[in-house]
Image 1 (cartoon, rainbow, N blue to C red):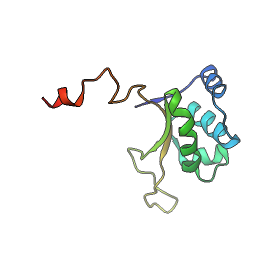
Image 2: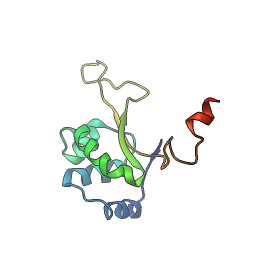
Image 3: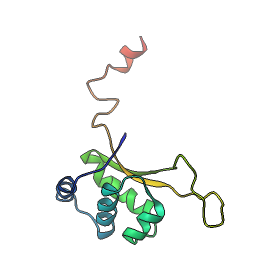
Image 4: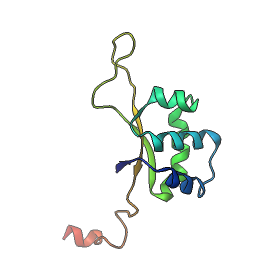
Amino acid sequence: MNIVKLYAHEIEALLGTVSLSNQQRRLLVYVANNPRSLTLAVNGATAIGNISVVASRLNEKLMRHGYVMACLTPEEPISNRFGESSRMTEWSLFTIAQIAANDPCYDSAKEVTE
């Protein structure tokens, strides 16, 4: 999987192919334009309280188009206002492979084990 930033015309094309709730639309547009966005920034820009739930439902629709939205722990931990390590994550849109391990382009399990 690779992090991707979509251009405006790519976002519009994607929006035209899936039926999204208002929250899903806001989340997709923001994260597609702003990869590696901290949870706090995503929350502030989209007014979504539980980003994970919205992203999970959005992923059901995005996967068939070769994308998935996910969060990763930043390489450098983010401290909260008290100087403690927070559980803040970075949200991005990722491209996913359109083939599966059991697709015909791969050898059969029997051939692989021999």
